[in-house]
Structures are given as structure tokens and as C-alpha cells.
Amino acid sequence: MVALYILVGVLAAVVLCLLAKICSLRRAARELAESFVAHLAADTNTLMDISCRDRHMLRLAATLNEQLRLLREQQLRYLNGDRELKDAVTNISHDLRTPLTAICGYLDLLGKEEKSPDVVRYLGFISNRVEAMKQLTEELFRYSVILSSQGELKSEPILLNGALEESIAAFYAALTARGITPDIHMTETPVHRKLDRAALARVFENILNNALKYSDGDLEITLSDCGEVTFTNTAAGLDGVQVGKLFDRFFSVEAARNSTGLGLAIAKTLVEQMGGTVAATYADGRLSVHVVFGES
Image (cartoon, rainbow, N blue to C red; front, top):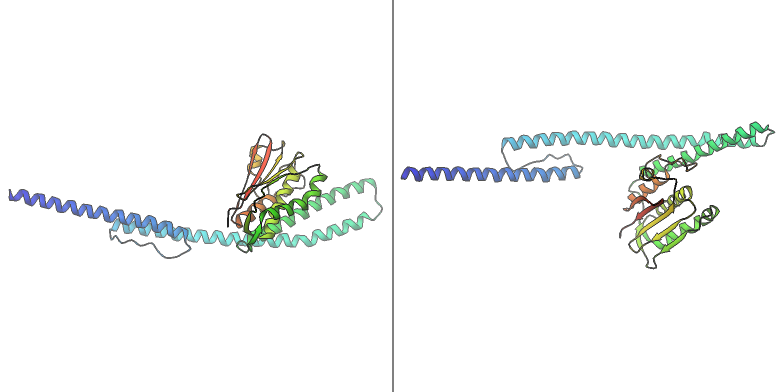
């Protein structure tokens, strides 16, 4: 009988030890999971540590620390390469401005000389291509500058209603020249946000330019109480696949003449820098661009 009690006591002790071991391993796994998430989110070179001294868990922690180190090295190489690429694009697009300006000057001089009809026609082709190249170079320069200056936007209290009205008024002549009379639905409730005034104007300008390119003759602009601005127009020449790529860099639909494919990419970058979201939807032949600025 005594031997049975001893056996039960030993088994109970083993079970307690196993339970303690399991609890220790569970705590170590939880610590590793929490520490791993924290180290991924933070820019730190500190190593993950656990309270458990189990050799298997310590080996797992060491492996994870090594992978984190490699990940940081790759991230650093990517950031440095990305920064160098942005700087190179900025410098190249800036350097292209001077020869393009000179070409335009010589074309103007040639335009004043006596020319045959064929020469006039060829010069027209050249002028159109040079103008398109100037536009692309300017947009490329602006886009690279915007990407390089992330975090430098200056937020200030802005009445979204007024900012949108100003942008529409600035484009009204260009819209009516295309036979487009905007149908405007703006909430009477003042919508206040903290945004960068110049960046916001650029966003609306680029989206309205997009409407000029793709609209089949109509444009509906809506501002809701929650700060969502929607630009909707009929665009039968588009499809869902093209609309899904409108915010991609350098993507342009063939129907949009003289398009650089950077206007909406710039708008998307600026909106996200100001803490907002922008997206495009397409249904029943109508394109809608939604810009949302949540409460600051």
C-alpha cells in the first residue's frame, strides 16, 4: 500500500513538472510571438529575448533573431536603393528640362522661316512630340519630388467645401470648352479637415484633368458630410481592368491623348500622405473616383 502511495506521489510530481514545463513553453511561445511582431513594427537592432531557458525555445529565438537581422539588412538595401533611384529620376528629369527648352526655342525660330508644306507638317509632328516629352518630364520631376518629400506636408485647418469649390471654378472654363457642365452636389454642412492646402489643390486638379481626358461629356461631383469627394463621369471607352490600373505609375489609356500616366499616381501619393484614401470604381459605363479624408 505504501508503495502505491509512493508511485502515485511520483506520478503526481511528474505531472506537475510536465504542466509547469508546458506552461513555461506556452509563455515562451507567446513572448516570442509578441516580440516578433514588435520587432517587425519597430526600427530597432535589439534582439528578442525570452524568460524560458529551454534549449529548443532558445534555439528558435536565435533562429528568429538571425532572420530578423537578415530582413533588416535587405530592408536597408531596399531603402537605400529606392532613395538612390528617386534621386536619379529627379536629377535626370531636371536635366532634361534644359535641352527640351532649347529644342522648343529652335522650333520657334524655324517656325518663322519660309518652309515648304511638307516641312511645316513635319515640324508640327516634332512640336507635338516635344510638347508631350516636356509634359512627361515635368510630371516625372514633380512625382519624384513628391516621393522624396514624404512627411514634409504642412497640415492646416481647411474647409473642404471651399477648397473643392475653388478647384471646380478654376477648371470650369476647360470643362465647358469640352461641353461638360459639372453637376455639383455639395453638403451644406461645413467639412473641416487638417490638410496641406497646395497638395489638396493638386489632388483635385489631377482628378479633374482625368475627367477631361476620359469623360464622354458629363461630370458629377459630390461632397458628403463624412468628407468623401466623388467624381463620376460616363467613360464608355474604359473597362474594369483599365480602371483598376488608373493609379499605377505610367499607366495611361490609349484614348487619353498626351497622357503621361502620372496624374492619378501623384494624386494617390498625396492623398495617402495626408492620411486619406483614394480609389476608382467602374459600373454601367461610369467611372467614379472616390477621395476620402477622415476626421483629423
